[in-house]
Length: 222
Length: 222
DNA sequence: TTTTGTGAATTGCTTCACAGCA
DNA sequence: TGCTGTGAAGCAATTCACAAAA
Image (cartoon, rainbow over all chains, first blue to last red; front, top):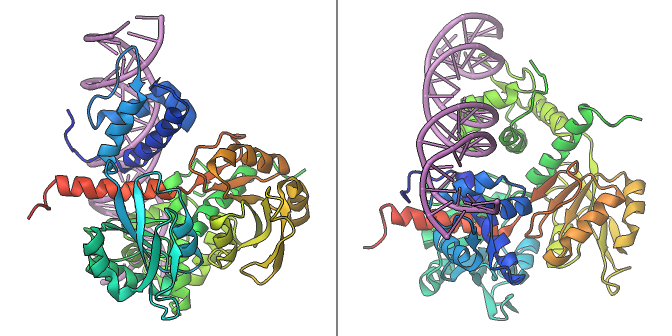
């Protein structure tokens, strides 16, 4: 029963981890794996993995486990990364610059094909993306054209917080359908446009909290 | 009842968002706020916010709401960011470089004070951190010394995936007590050391999934 | 009024445990 | 035997709804 009866968001998050682990196994020439092996590698229970996959159909072979290549293909299809997709980025500051040079998501089916900024001094600047493809920085007002030209669906937002909301609106108006936001605030745009948040400080605070409560509950103080 | 009977991790994640929103309110000279107002700004229910805060005691004033300054101080205390804390970074590649220049977490109580790499060509290079403080890149083997000297608790890991596990071990051995990991893999180190994961590709895949299922469930196809 | 804090009810997620298949 | 897929059980998180306070 592969019905789409609302997939837990935690499940979707883990699918990416399964895919990532499977790619590693494939690189190591493993042909098959099991929910136990995946669980050990990712710090999850085998039952969790089987349940997650069960939302999307039957993937495994009792007594055998999962065929690595087969599961990779099916997970890519589920995540919508079976075809490469083009991505744009807005905000060519420090972080934006680092991400354009980052090869990490090229491996996973995403290609950065257009970069925007509203600083006149940057417009027209050329540089080579991680793929080697030359990219020219364009003004924000050119976004709609690029979205059409490259069939872009996803955008990465790396502008300062004060501008983020307005630029996010520009992105949506230009046709971007999902946003990966690095600015430290909650965006209020068309609710049909999913937004994923990456906030450095929030993550550091998680760690800080776990450290303080860990010491409050036992060890520390010699 | 402010007992520490296992705080839901989702609650802890949201505390950071509350703090962030409160800092914004303070900048706009708001003196008080309410669970409704915070909820609207962050896309959460008022009840959720009250429940989250209730784990840690009583913060609000019936009929009034929450005093912004007061709640900021108490949240900082809970998160362990009431005192500034020093942080190190390992891996001075593109991403590492961008993060050392990033001022975002300075505002939130974290200070980057030491940077490491194992590339001999980089060792000794000097640059100015976001604070303006000059930092010299050191070899990974110098970590333990820096941890002692600056009382460092948290480390940011931005080395390539192949080296990440080994470097994470070095960090833990050097005394780092929590790791913010940007390498796309699950780290297996001392389970007493909390790890927070930031994987770009995983986030893009979340968005990709939500796009494909959204179109599978209705709209699209003109 | 308004708004908090909180037990109770609900919803959602994870783990268990076993039937079925290789 | 080994392993998946899955209903049922158990646990966790969220929302509800209202008493108490300003």
